[in-house]
Length: 312
Length: 91
Ligand SMILES: Cc1ncc(C[n+]2csc(CCOP(=O)(O)OP(=O)(O)O)c2C)c(N)n1
Ligand code: SF4
Ligand code: SF4
Ligand code: SF4
Image 1 (cartoon, rainbow over the protein chains, first blue to last red):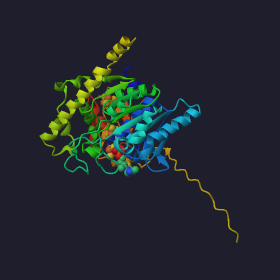
Image 2: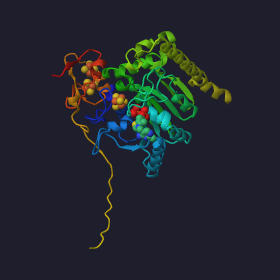
Image 3: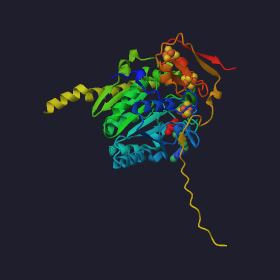
């Protein structure tokens, strides 16, 4: 059911006066998590900007309970917390991991993969600003090709690791991609995730004005352009079925996609990126959509239904 | 003089949600958003996208800004479909 903005809660979930930079995508995203899931949520947050945004004791800049924990333990701590809530008969509490791209794709990956394999009943959200921002913009395995960081002075020479596809390969009940440019889509996906038992993974694309070097007023615009260029496709994998989300469907066709140059020219991290970077990213987008086509063909809701019919 | 029992102190690093965990962030602003109520169509997009939760909704869904904490990022002005928000330089 499409979400009406009027019906979303008026509660202030981000306490104003927190430490986030102006235009921060992580504060935007956290707000949507609470709008989607309501009050019975505990967040588990490993090191990263979101641990700093909370501010300095005794005040917290976030209006919900948070356990701050080391990188390597985020998913396993959440799994343990969920088990404890179940023991107390509190099945209504959602335990949500909120981790950066470094915390997810590099440092915390073993705990993430373990929790997925055990099918622990948690929601894991990766808030992906495509670098280690909190420590001063170092590359992560999720930094895209050609992007400047303080550890890739001349542009990264490797492509972005595709964690959502890796999570689909874990065959967990739910995997989705989302973007701070499309909050309603993100909120809908979180609500669906909350209704499913077992391990849920949601990957939120979160353009960061500080690390990507763009005007802080443009955070939603840059996020939307990532989707429109085809670089960040929105999709869902639900109990073995794969579906491209409505905001991304038209970008299946290369001629419908926004030019990659349009996206790059807004971002200082691509300053000096020549035509070879554009070409390399274009071929990346094409490969990405070939994967998607493959998944769609073999796991679309209709083909899955047919397979089930032919089995019986 | 006898030896006294060492005192055990439990220090729980618990924080409580409160506004202004790093102070009045309104002082960070170079420009402030000013809403033209005549133009506003109450679409709530500025409220949806404001990262700081400093766009507030009145009962009738007319929006207004919490200038104590608004950081002046300009997102609200960028997303407004009818240009009802102008960024005005702070004096
Ligand atoms: C084991 C360990 N290594 C390094 C650090 C230092 N550290 C703190 S935050 C951070 C960056 C995290 O980046 P990411 O997960 O992408 O989140 P972001 O800051 O971008 O939100 C690092 C490296 C740490 N706290 N623990
Ligand atoms: S560096 Fe980026 S993600 Fe981190 S607090 Fe600042 S704007 Fe947010
Ligand atoms: S300028 Fe930024 S912080 Fe201030 S009200 Fe607008 S969106 Fe919110
Ligand atoms: S985005 Fe513009 S029209 Fe919509 S509620 Fe805000 S000020 Fe009003």
